[in-house]
Amino acid sequence: MTSEPIEQWRILRTAVPGPASQALQARKLAAVSAGVSTGLPAYVERGAGGILVDADGNQLIDFGSGIAVTSVGNGAPRVVQAVQRQIAELTHTCFMVNPYEAYVAVCEQLNDLTPGDHDKRSALFNSGAEAVENAVKVARHVTGKNAIVAFDHAYHGRTNLTLAMTAKNMPYKHRFGPFANELYRVPMAYPYRWPGGPQHCADEAFGYITDQIHAQIGEENCAAVIIEPIQGEGGFIVPPRGFLPALAQWCREHDILFVADEVQSGFCRTGDWFACDDEGVIPDLVTTAKGIAGGMPLSGLTGRAELMDSIHPGGLGGTYGGNPVSCVAALASIETMRELDLAARAREIETILRAGLDKLAAAYPQVGEIRGRGAMIAMELVADPETKAPAAALTTAVNKACHAQGLVTLTCGTLGNVFRFLPPLTIGDDLLHEGLDILADAFAASV
Image (cartoon, rainbow, N blue to C red; front, side):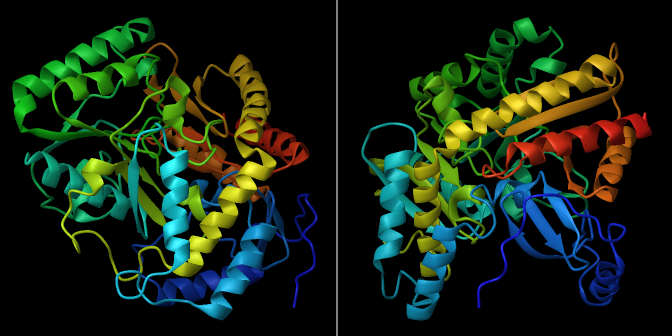
């Protein structure tokens, strides 16, 4: 049976969360580990476009996309049709036991879409963390070296290995160690907080970082440098222009693999198919997940053919990796992105978001910086624009006020003071404007 279409406007029938959601939250507290938290316990039953419908019938504006996952929107028609057909025909065999075409087709698409026109190979997994772990495996296997370099403010996952590369302690790393070794962290090129000022960040950060790798690790011991072209959980930090190309070139000169973690920034999110495309950076390995499959669990690792083919048979894989239902969802999502030109739509969304956020910045000195690209935009809040002391409490208060008015917003940042805006790329302009109005009201009530 087909559900009724969801009208694309906000409706508040009860407080948020309402009675039905509160009852479900009580069941959650009795059944689910306290370690699994919920930012806004309004239990969602349906979704489409830029709207989520909760158990009380409230229609919430979605500025989060399930953390950049439902880029084509919940219930995208091509995705729904593909999943319905596939689940009736084949749900699982494990590609390593009995293969199927959809897995191959997704790898073909990844090889074609990721940066660079060189010969590539791909492998599929379940989550971004799995893709990153396998990137580390490939890098170490190919180079015969052990050291992996990551960056301050990085987020690469929640497994033991990826937590060692993830920068933020609470809630991700606290008391979960010891972590995997031979993983090193260097400062991020963070223009807003670079000691020498944003105008010097590109050159100074590159020089300092490469000096640190040389002195503390040694290029001859370094298998890979892994970086998010635009950092996600760490605060949507955008490195200054020129930094990524210089770093990639330095890696090539020293036989170090350059790995781009595009889990959050990939698949049209930043106004290009991948964030690396903005400066023509071509990584050796690329990790993908989140927006790839319209909400179905899937991730990928794509790399130069000679790297990916150097792994012995059976060295990559997993029971559920590249599940056929997730694969057809990915193919349908990619087709939707092409048909609707969602990369261009992301740039339109940026124009609307920045206009609204610029008004906030003009009115409130607590808005320290607005940054990002496409539909991956952030606002960093500070208590003092001179000292740039983080305003974590204000960030939390504004977030709660948005939630109460039916706007699903997300915060992030190592310092807990960054709003991140990740609306579905299919959201309408009216919802974007209304969401920005709600944000402005929440800000005025919280300052």
